[in-house]
Image (cartoon, one colour):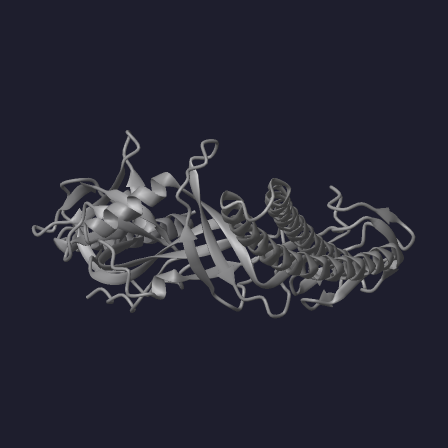
Length: 440
């Protein structure tokens, strides 16, 4: 019993001695140990390439629906469905027999018209010669009439001889008028023959064109789809149903809707000088496929639409994209990363440094010049990877608390340590043009 009490007294003494030593050690605390420790990041500016990621859909650069221009029977199909065809290649053959017969008939009509025109011109020549003869006869008859009238006055000839001379002059005049009328008639016949020849030539040309239309050719180069008709089908000219469809896939269009809100914001930033377009490089567009892989080639922004879709409140951006391997197919959905421009004096801060006040406004805690915690309300533009791009709220040189915010409150003095090396940024649509300066 005595031994156990002795051991208890010794243990109690050791314990009390340790507590006393600890009390002595804590009796002189350092000033720095009483301050909470936080990690801070010094705010700097940098150049940032701003982009917008928008959903888009592919559409063929050119599309041609193949329809017959004449009616007839399909004799042959001369392409393989799903293959690439060249412009001018024959796709279908319509039975040409009736169109060849129409061409032969038109050519025969032309020959007949030409012969009729030759006869009309020959008759016109005869009529004109008759007019010349009748003019000479009339001239002689008028001279005889004048001579006989003078002789009749001098009673050298009888009244019957004078009357005969007058009658001959009248007959010659009537004959001349008849010959002139025949000339006019022959002229009309010649004109009608010439018009008939022109009509016959037009009929030949029409028949030749229709005969050519029996060979249905590809109007563009591209990939042809399935055939909607088979050999032996009867087709009609300009029918509603297309025989097949050709689509040009290299290059290919990507149509991307952009909201008018984003469009107005971009214009305002450009007018205010916040964004620099950096030459023509802003027309280049990166694409992300449906499976998340980046498309290997960049597209070129062709134009922005000028009409707003009233149902979506957006305009269409059309992007022309090379597609040599045929990876992009019409109707495919993808994401387009459209370059807005470069913001030269951009401020980026880690997302983990930003919290929300009771009203939902984004705020950060900073360490002011006196080493005390202060709060700043921010205006955020967008997320870039694991950072926020700021509009307003911070200035270069401000020290933002990134870690240790839970241990402090506004007005409390804190001990600062530089924020350590950060993990790699998450993949984002925007990226700095040059690396951000490391906090000092």
